[in-house]
Image (cartoon, rainbow, N blue to C red):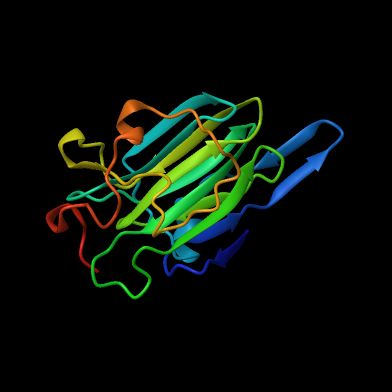
Length: 183
């Protein structure tokens, strides 16, 4: 397994070892010991699965308080996955990193607490899986506008399919300071 640091401290790209032959493949998608040794948290409390069609964009979501770390992967299809630093006082506040995650590349992205997360589906459909370090708390859920011009994410779609919540989200600048985690 290879763990690669991204431009944002704490956001890690994981490339699991995949063993394949004419029958198919095998890989460990999670091993507490192995991932802990690589610097990822060992305690995940909730697994989530979402299915979306081409062009659906979900995000940018985070929780505060009760921040969630997320280990995300794609079981079917392909997405462009994004993490944004929303920690007040962070030297990388408002910066983003994006990666392609797919059933073909089998990569995972770890997004620590204090980062907003979002993805857009590039394939006909995608089955998106993620492990969380904290339980979902609707009262703590926060959303930043997906196309906030000050963040400037290079989404590979022009007119995504969005939920009402994601369409009406504030920009990072408009977010009340009490809704943002501190570094």
